[in-house]
Length: 184
Image (cartoon, rainbow, N blue to C red; front, side, top):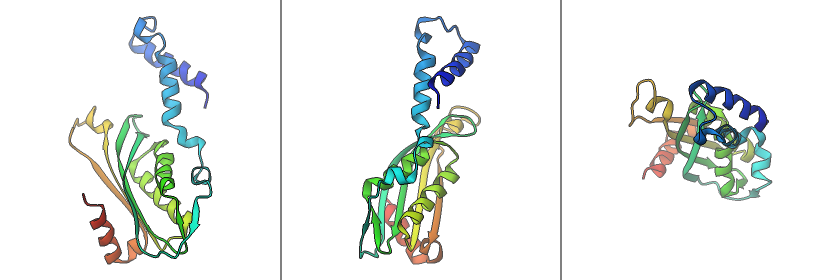
């Protein structure tokens, strides 16, 4: 990802709507390029990198839940942010993942151009593949600025998506336990 190419693109875009020589805009193309590079840094990461071998043997076979993981992503349709939180649960089978690594997986996928539906599935599949869990459940709740700032302009709308794998999909009791544990 080239900051110079991003900067040139922002210079073109901003120049179409305002004077790039205006004092407030002189450095904006560079600042915007660096911001965009940061907001899409998930493309430069892999699951293996962010987890960094933080998988540990465990006899636990009870549900592990990490809730309220804040996330910031960019809608791939309008390049506007969506902001929310993820709740991630899994039932281990011999190994657990370091707690902070669950949040890092969420961040890695969120920091790509996304739709919320895919983000939710990507998180669930990564946790399942890493841990070999008997089941994984992920719920993402987010507010989309593409819906709030433009289009229908609905300020209080939010979207919830879920991905249920293994026992979270097949066993109603497991799914119900997860849903009850993430409530306030």
